Image (cartoon, rainbow, N blue to C red; front, side, top):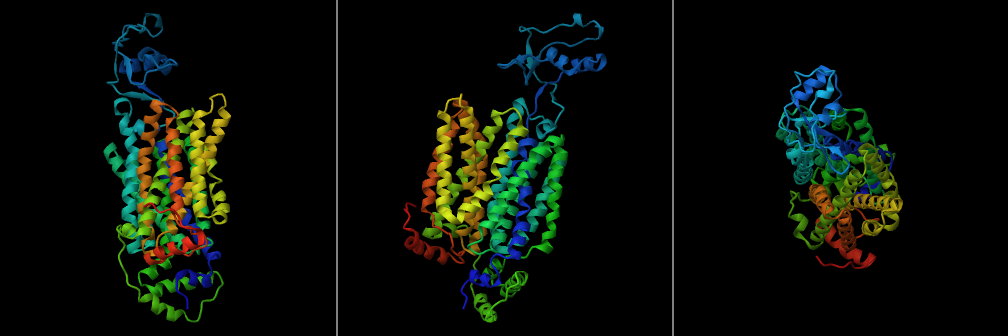
Length: 544
């Protein structure tokens, strides 16, 4: 008699046409989630700007003077390269009514001794692209408000991680995903029509809330259709589609000059995934955990039919046994109640936090060191493309724990080496940095994959959501750590990233190896599996 879902799945087909189809359909939305997560690089970009001067603007209009000429007359030079000041202007009365446009020699030319004042009349922006910054004038004294754009999104991620995990484990993966997709699309549209920045931030937070819910739910839903030997396929599809979405972002932003049109372009395709209500089945693992045996077995039979497999004759007897399981509502306390669960949760929280701080820190660092944000972002995205393939080739060969350890070790060493390489060897510095960034990406993907395997079915979505919420805290901390430490020494952030990665490399060694192991169905499976792993892989150091 079969004792768990993985044995049943072997009869229905653990990696057939059904799994390949649902893996593609389930991970396809992740390509659009990339727009939400990193689209702020272009939506919230701060273009070149300078103080507006109403009098000088009239001269430009009446006399046909170029914008650059007016700028030279009204804005002082500042900075090491003689660039124009962004937040001050010459404090002069620009009254040209008595001066002929053809007699420019009579114009009063400002000097270094001319007093300056703040931009009390507003700002002029480079007209090439409009962004959220230009829409709400988030520059100079108001520039700190621009940082709230990403902070609000991360706050939504954090809240969504807890709420969606409970909802998905309590009411189902499919329902949570459909509601989240609808909320993600509606909040994205509301961002475009927000007349006030505070209201914009509210919808930005809601966008983060629903994006996190949709991502974690669809990932868990899909992976629960796979057996232990083929779960890596889901991670490969997920990472590849996410990286593909990132590659498209700079191209869209380059050709779509209006931030509202760009936001509209990135939001409308989201509504297409509402058809998944009729296309995607509910997770049979979740249905069984809720005692909904008939619905679960109907889905399993459809899986077998699609995979051209036959189900065992004693299926009805198993239905009765599974239906007698006690249903216990999921709780965050369950993630910390028992020793093994508590250890897994604490280590995974730190791993999520570290991977996000280091990954985003390296991404932001590449952006501030280059002049072309479109090209810099494109290169960074292309570097990530091989992540899924490398992960696929290694995760079952070397195992989850060794791969996660090695990835963080390589990333840590790379971050520690780069600051001490002379600037003359820029090619070597850049190459090591790319290797480090690729290692961080592989480590991040392994964390996601490992997280989903370490929790029982009734707590799997909640476990992924709670642990991944640490990445949302990391998303808020990453720019602050980068810019504050870089103001002391430009290479100081890399030293922090290196130490954090090395610590993570040591901690993940205490996680159990899940290669070739069935997904746990209960908390007892997690606790008992630890004893089996100690016999098979050796006893890990337990300091938590």
